[in-house]
Amino acid sequence: MMADEGPRRRRRRGGRKERERDVSASSTNSASGGIMRPPIILAKPNADRPINDNLRGPDQPRPVVMLKAREDSRPLVTSTNTATHNIPSLLAGEHAPSQPIYQIQKNPTLLDSAHPRLNFTPEMSSSVKVIDEGFQWTENGMEVLTDNTDFFVIGVLGLQGAGKSTIMSLLAGNQPSDEHKSYIFKPQSREVREVCGHQTTGVDMYVTSERTILLDCQPLLSASILDHMVHTEKKYPSEYSTTENCIEMQSLQLMTFMMTVCNVVLVVQDWFTDANLLRLLQTAEMLKPPTPSPSHDIPPDDTPEYYPHIVFLNNKASRQDFGLDSYDEMQKILSKALQHSKLRCKGSLSMTSSNMFPGHSQGQRSEVNLYLLPSMQGTKEQGNILTLLPEYRGYPSFELLMKTLRNQLLSMSRSLITNVTISEKYWFHYANKAWESIKKSQFLSEYNRLLP
Image (cartoon, rainbow, N blue to C red; front, side):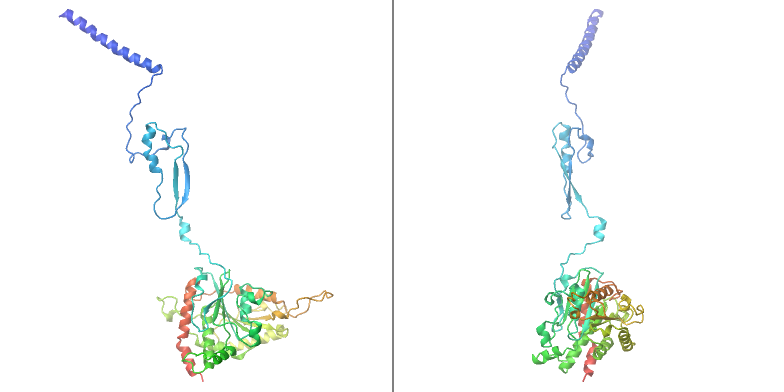
């Protein structure tokens, strides 16, 4: 028994030595350049394993990032998922794409959403009609208005041939040297003046680049309009007893409309002064309907009454009108005629505040808004070549006076037309509502009933 166990133990030692020789041979073959079997790596699923930039080798190129503006509100599918699905292939030794592309969506910032940009509106080349010849409201001017709240409205009133359209065209940007055909508000042509006709009908509107809304209207108490209605047998509304009463009531409607929707109303005269025009101005103030409420939530009784600035513009003034005594006399007459008026006709604009009268004291709060303009044709185009001094006129040039008038008008205080801040488009709807309210006013209807 003992003899048999000895050899068995020796065989066990021999098997151990054989295994050691196999391991030694394997290490020798590995050291001599043999290929070792790749190890097996257990990886997490794609959804649970974070993507790490360190997985990319140093020789792999960096990804190219492209910025693309958002075209719609749908989420943008990027190539991140594609790169995630390719990670097992990278681990397996496969070659990845040379330059993976990622698209990053550009989201709007808080500043862009809080301050919307104003829509671009084309510049107007001519005026548009908002009230036609039949005194009906039109929607022609809506497309030129924006949501801007910093705007200014200037209207004009006056008798026939006083120069209303010419002055409004110069305020809109025309120059005195321009041809009358190129004026924004068409003035009377030579043929119309020869037959004593009128040019403007209804109310025309123009919006300047400074967002100033200019309103030009047909002449007040016009004999030409009266003659046109008589000869063409145009039927006036049945509520008016005579054609003369129709002309007067239409003039009152235009005046009350301008007092309701304008910040400044220019009262243009070509001589000083017409008592009928002053009487009509006082009547329009008396019959002015209550200011319509801009919102249905505000009762009409709680809406404060609105009155615009009134500026008396004496057009085609002579040299004597520019004298200090004549100017003071005009101030006294207007101040006496409007002493009980609620219109804002004092302390807003004057000739003395612009240093046009060097010998006169500076403008005071009690001074009436009176401005003088000479005739455009009164200036001498070409002086004598032998005369070194310019021709004496007795007043500044028309260009200087017109420029000063425009600067003073645009620098006047801009009080709210309504009790809330409104935009240009809302003002247009408000003007439409005011015009319909004026045509249905009980005050004007009662005044028409009392006319002879």
